Amino acid sequence: MDTNGHRPTREWKFRGEESDLQTLRRRLDAWRARCRGPQGRIPEALWRAAVGRARRAGVEPVAAALRLKVAALRRRVATPAVPLPAPPVPPAFVELGLVAPAATCQLEVAAPDGAKLSIRITGPLPDLAGLLAAFGRRRA
Image (cartoon, rainbow, N blue to C red; front, side, top):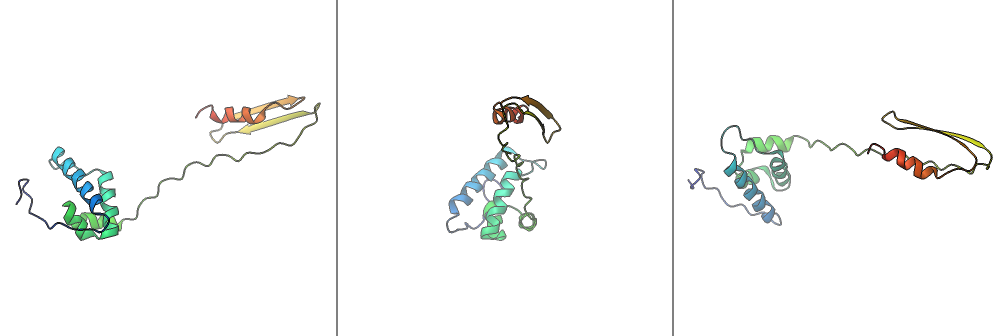
C-alpha cells in the first residue's frame, strides 16, 4: 500500500491521451486530498471528464488509472449524455416595404414574454429597425 492507504496500480499508457489522463488524475487526487469522508461526492465535472476518457480508452483502464470504482464508471458510461438545451432562436427580421409619405401605418409587435409594442405612424417612416431592436433589448 502507498502512503495514502491505496494499493499500487499499474500505470496505464494511452496514446495521445496520456497527458489528459495524468491531468485528470492530478485533479482527482487534489479533490480527494480536500474532501475526505463519506459525504464528499466527486464533482460532476470530474465524472464527465472521466466518462469521456472511458468512452475513448475503455472503462477498466481509465477506472484503474484514476482509482475509480469500475462499476460506477461503467454505469455512467452506459447512461446517455443529456443534451444541453438549444439556445433560444432570435425572431426573424421582417422587412417593410416603402409606404407613401402621407399614408398611415400601424405596427404591432409582441415579444415571446408577452410584452407588446404598438406604433401608429402618419407620414414618413422613422428608423423602425432601431426602434424594434431597442424593444427587443429592453429586458435582456
